[in-house]
Length: 358
Image (cartoon, rainbow, N blue to C red):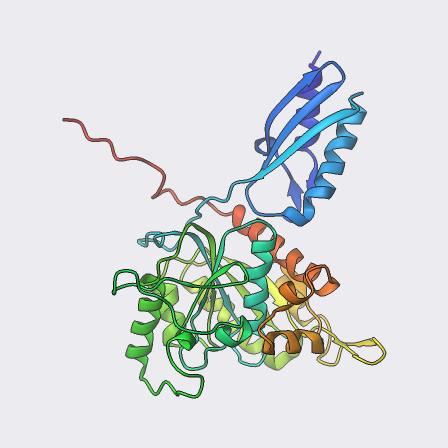
């Protein structure tokens, strides 16, 4: 007959994780001890999910009560690990995982999603950075309220700017907002690599890279030379946007970068006067695309004037309204994105010490 400890472990391993869509598994139960009618449980998740912790704690308490244990002590921790990247590439110094955010088309709110996704990952408990990879049209410096220029501790590399708890780098903090970048492709890609590799990123679980629209030089450089652990595709519901979003998705498939899922932005419009919600761009486009390519729909976001106003003011939704329904949607997308990445293979090129026999 099994012991109370083993029975409770089995119950906890079978708990459903809404962010992965699967069971927690035995590896999530790091330690479990029962003393009389008391139980202490240590849980460990492979992705940040503070917003889900209260629900998980309640599920653990219910499982313990079913075993006759009423006094429950629960400790939940997060351990983000580095996941596999394209063959032949090594992880970037100071960064465990790079997540690329792409759309294939401009005007779908990709930069807004990138900024709020990075902030949502941080709100869920991760150490996060954001790289604005749009050299021609940088916008993150305005969206995050950055001012001034970055320091260079060694006169060779740049210290990332700090905004709302994020480490940030953008060409927009190095040049004036009205200065056009009249550069050809090779110079643009060289600048992207300098911003990426020449920034002193510090202990990041995730670096979110806000890609420019299209599938050109910058996207190809990122896909071939930058160790990307996964990509998120942003689209709006209408067919015109989906055409280019599909191209972006196929590009990542061709270079063996896992697509973590699709975010459908501007899924509905919310009237600022009466609150009426209407699908002005059509319905179900993102879901159909997700089903066609066998990837998750990470979430849908409304076309809401508050999001635009907050980005223009340099205080994104996660900062301006952290407890709002809008912020909750971004945090749900962040949890699903990180959970999807956590299911990918680990990076086997790190974490193994070199052994020298003399």
